[in-house]
Amino acid sequence: MVKPPAKKPEHAPITGFPVRDGALTLGGIKIGQLAARVGSTPFYAYDRALISARIAALRQYLPARLKLHYAIKANPMPAVVQHLSRIVDGLDLASAGEMAVALDSGMDPARISFAGPGKTTAELSQAIAAGVVINMESGAEMENIARIAEKQGIQARVAIRVNPDFELKSSGMKMGGGPQQFGVDAEQVPEMLRRLGKSGLDFIGFHIFSGSQNLSEQSLLDTQEKTLDLALSLAESAPTPPKKVNIGGGFGIPYFPGDRPLDLKILGAGLAKILKKFDQRLPETEVILELGRYMVGEAGIYVTRIIDKKISRGQIYLVTDGGMHHHLALSGNFGQLIRKNYPLAIANRMDSPDREQVNIVGCLCTPLDRLGDKMMVPVAEIGDLVVVFQSGAYGLTSSPTAFLGHPAPGEVLV
Image (cartoon, rainbow, N blue to C red; front, side, top):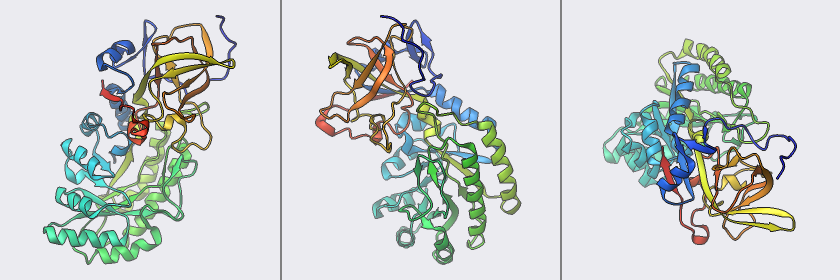
């Protein structure tokens, strides 16, 4: 087998996982040893040192004024949440199930917030009893909270989730601007604040979230400037000065060719400048940056084993024991308009010079079950391990694990 000519990169560069003796390592453990320790494939593995390093970098470059919250929906594995709860300032959740994980972490309930457009009465009752901050998504929800809180004899902590009249440009998923199921339209918030002042609820502040997976520093800074300006404007109608303003996050990570990692130095300097203006008006208000994918996405891998190798009309197929039922985003069926390959590797042959073009697929009876299309990888054999990078966020829990009845993968924090 000869080396192919140089070509454009297949995916964003991966630098977080060292190679030792030709094998990828995670947490200092070779991939084969880790697979043996887990006991079976497929599985997800997350590197706690990489997660800690990401938080340390955020602390180093962003203004100390900002509080860092982890959005549990990115990766709700209890061990991951426990680890992060010790190094971030708060947790944000979107269901009663995530609330249980957050409360088990030992985080102060006052530093936990609950968002989502369809909270049930039972979920609201649990949140009020727990003392977490509820990000209200409508006037009707506010009335329901007030009724439940009165019945419980507890003053519920509430914030208003605002649907701004602008969006986060160049974001992978827009969650603000225009008609939305999320939050209260900005122009309706002053009237809601007037009613809130008479409700007996404890007004905490605002949650203003515009979008996610953005790799443009300027776009992020422009949006955060608008977000804080909007918060200042809305605060004029508030019954009391807001104690907290959650400005969302939107920080993206690189997945595909041409993707460039965010420069935290640029973001830090820009946010510091924006906050000076805000602090002239509301110096006592806590400003929260809520991040999920950015904290954990690059610290996780999905590991699956090759169980067959076949040739079909001149193309090589590596068939694995994993697939889209474990990692829907990998298959392109979680928001991609045009499918692109996630970065992946033959993890036990990292130093192999001989390469070939292959299609890597899962074990499901559907043509949608694709891990990699026409990718150049080291020559692989049955039994080798395929690792999918950038899998620490929106992996297992965003996937249809019940599809076709295959067993769920394991998860480990190393």
